[in-house]
Amino acid sequence: MDQRFEALQQQLQQHQAVAVAFSGGADSTLLLAAARDTLGADHIIALTAVTPYLVRQEIGDAVGIATELAVRHELVEMDMPEGIETNPSDRCYRCKRAMYLLLLRKAEEMGFQILLDGSNINDVDDYRPGLEATRDLGIGSPFIACGIDKALIRDVSMELGLPTWRKPTNACLLTRLRFNQRVSMDQLQQIEEAERFLGARGFTWVRVRCHGDLARIEVAAEQRELLLQQAETISESIRALGFRYVAMDLLGYQIGSMNDPR
Image (cartoon, rainbow, N blue to C red):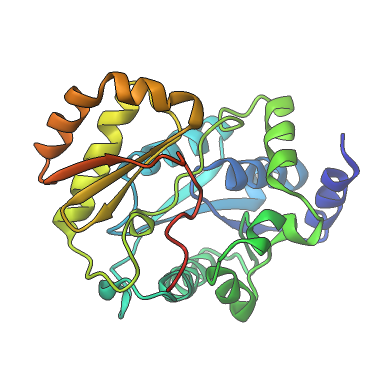
């Protein structure tokens, strides 16, 4: 096992019990599994914040994975934080701060004083104002502390047989909107349904970015040809959801392609 993962286990051993901010993604799943194996299932709890802009499938995934790992799991309902409705450039900070305050209160109510999240060192180099919120609130990020990156998370997850080792990253639906664009719940639903439709047609790494009434589709480079082959069907189906125009991004899938606040 990689020395960085051993360092993670040693760091977890410093706590008697921990709560894990759990999204059901690759990062938080590995952290939850590591905490369970290190501290025992009776000494951890998984907390999932359910927001209005969360992809619904992610909730089901989180519930299923927590059940598979045999750990306690709580869904914590969260309203849209104040100021988020205009999708400001600091939305991640506002959201993360509100979310982690909520999860901290829930953890404390259940007897857990330590809350950990699955941020890794790749997040440090990206535009992630949400990381400031975790630091401000004293949320532990053991992957960052131990120098663990996404590649190691996937490698170790595969070794441990975790179902998320190949799971695509799936940020909240607000990341499909331009900054300073007013958030419409109907529009978020359109985006989610469009991505679900594309996923059902075999597109694994996919985003539908919203520019008003235009849907800009990003898929993995190796699937761009497949997207073009199905262009007529895809365009017709996505327009039926309420978009007027449908376009393919020539650069393909890019994490954080709408992170530029300009």
